[in-house]
Image 1 (cartoon, one colour):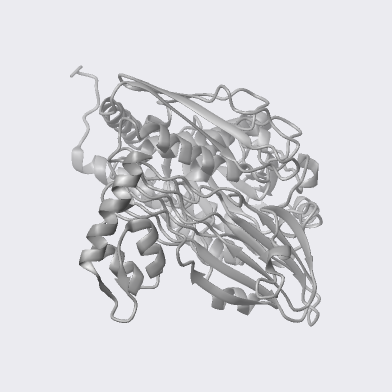
Image 2: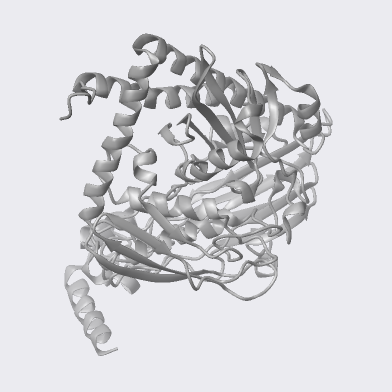
Length: 586
């Protein structure tokens, strides 16, 4: 060690590293507890992070990986665009520009500089998915054809000046938005979260001194860099490829083709999306930042669980996504459904890695954001309510276990909105919430079950939006596993003419009083041959109502007596031998 090299005390290193993480976590807690919307305070559709003075990501809360990857581009771009010389202590900017490092317009970031004794320390940032940002449909999601239809576009703009909200800017933003009361609360919660984060970072600096603080921040980044290099070196060198698609774009019947080539060589990983479709005038375009977030999540998921995520990790992700494609949309492409493409890209990346890392990847998940939104005017109060949810679905099976039922997947780390809370805030009812029997992808390990959620509007008209996918083909299985049940979106599912009421996965529907929309998400794909599944596990699923006895027989070769709920061993052995023989012949 060179004589002038500062010494790293391992205990102090861990204390400061943990403290940096806790700054972001405390920001997240403040945002969650202060927010008004169910989507933020309960579903936790938000993210918080700290960046150093060079706009490098240093720490982040355990919230939404889909957001945090996009932060990496958004904050540096916004600072350069606005000009660091134009930022004073106590200022905060608001931004949601999809083509300046952002995602879709609902994801609004509020961030600001932190100063100590007049010197810039870094930046704190909070991103929240707002339930409405204006545009052509309530909740600001829908099958739009250009960015201008999707809502208010916010370039880096000073929302807070020297600690006080700029009322003129705030009023201008709120004038574009339907759910003004809830949006006001969520914006103020973001400001509060940033204030908490800035205060905690200043406390750290006053305790250790700025020089010591900077020294250990750099040590944390270098530590992550070393660990990332080591983790990448554990991935077998080679070229990994896969392709995938979205069922359709919302306006044409053409599938949206995706493909990737991943090159792993030594300590570097290169994601190449050459060959993906050109961007569409349809809600299926992912921004560059969204696609980068998919790459970051996929790579991070293959690494040790305790590894930090900061600039020392992100710097190793190299990506080629041609501008003007569905994985790198350029102005004025619509991007509201970009998350549908982004999560499908995530699924595709794991499928690519499966050839070299079969024990580490899952089969296909629901692999769509599964967005549902509605707007309704309360006839008692006159308030315009908007609600947004991204619904859970079946997770893909793994090499040693079944896929979880009705969960969010990959970088989508939100929760399911409780029925009680939704019903208490909106003049509607959730008339059904259940797992979907027989929706799993059969396999040695089965995929998780999809979820059904029915939205009933008994007394008032409403506008309902579905922005999703998977209504043509379900999630694929892997290594002999079968695909999960596809998604269904049905208007008034209990009416006699159910077939005629099936909705598109990308539509806006005007509802009459008494109408119901049934949102049914897909099941996850299976892993391995269903004929290799443990017969006791099959019986357990039958008894638990997850699959029917007929499905047990047809797909798993397991004969269950419904009257006794026991396995007929002789018939099962004979049937499995026959099915295996037929499969080998085919």
